[in-house]
Image: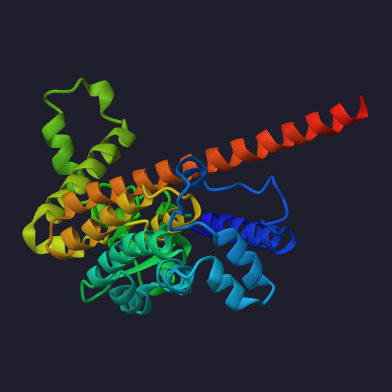
Length: 125
Length: 202
């Protein structure tokens, strides 16, 4: 990631968050729905993230967790990854990456991802 | 300017760091550097983008080249017509190549392999696509990201590079797939909305 790419990424993330702050996905039909859910009728692991982000950006954290419980883990992990990969450099970055890029972390994520996918559909969470 | 990794005085890999900042970290024209997209570790003075940084501050370079000059001319004279002789740029080009090959050979030695920087595994993108794009294909990218780390740790740098390319490829496939779906969805609703509005008016 060079400087330009970081700025583009930051601007994109900011735009997405601004849009999700002002647009409530439950009230606008044009907000994109999950292709998987539209076709299969089951929730995918990411389903509800727009509604959850909208709620979280308005400070309604419990409601956000209700839309997608998995995001409680993913958002902090994603932030830690961005810090370790794109913000820090040198020795400090290496120290962070030993945790964020560890095999345990990566395979744990994959396992939890599928576990969450099954559980949310079976238990309706 | 690209970000570069470089080897410090203790031959430890440092960086990545914006190229402009390299001289302030004690990097000279002879220091080995590497950036994304470069095949091998190369002397900073040999990297086109970095050359201007060292030309002003590096009088050592011409000094280093001169002793080799007579030797080269002696060798070339019998084979080349005399007209060729004053052509200085050709000489410098050849010399640069030789120097490059020398560094290339160094990088191929087993001892020097510890300096290879870890290829990017694009993990941020992989995680993002598993959540945002509804496409579990992002998982493939995560698996490749894990492979990059694993292969790098065990010293299989070539394979790690390939896994890195795959992680990038699958992140892009997933992201583009997701973006296309989102775009189609929004376009569909804009058209539907326009049709309803115009229908109501008629």
